Image (cartoon, rainbow, N blue to C red; front, top):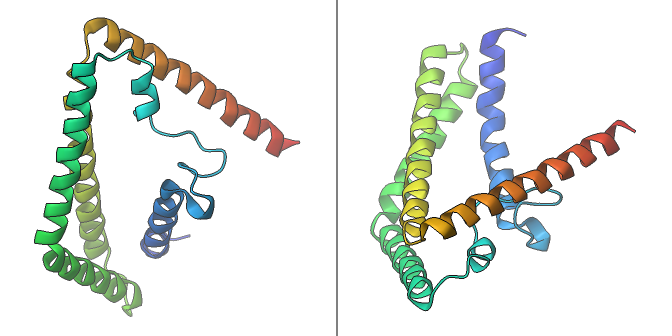
Length: 169
């Protein structure tokens, strides 16, 4: 398959895949985080509960979550029209690219770069929030957190291996 066709196909499939991924991340129809058989992320409240946090640490985390939630609500309200216009413009660019008589690889590359930049910005913000939350932990709690993450990753790897083996049979 020619590269141009691959890029067009990727441009068409990517929004669908992202939409599906976000639906599964929300939990799909049965509201289970991560979707069926998927391993969740490495940072959640359940793991934080296992760290024997002091009352002060719990209060700090609660305050951080509350402030973060309020900041997201405020930002959503403030920039709704702007983001909506950006989404519509982005969708129009994709449609124009996909439906054009000749494929413009430079435009496709630029569009893909914009998508990656936005995703990177969101990931950096998420990591910054996680860093702030973990910064209240003591060194012992951080060590236990790391241990719990490793344990979770091991269980996840076992699940994935089991699913892989079950699919081969």
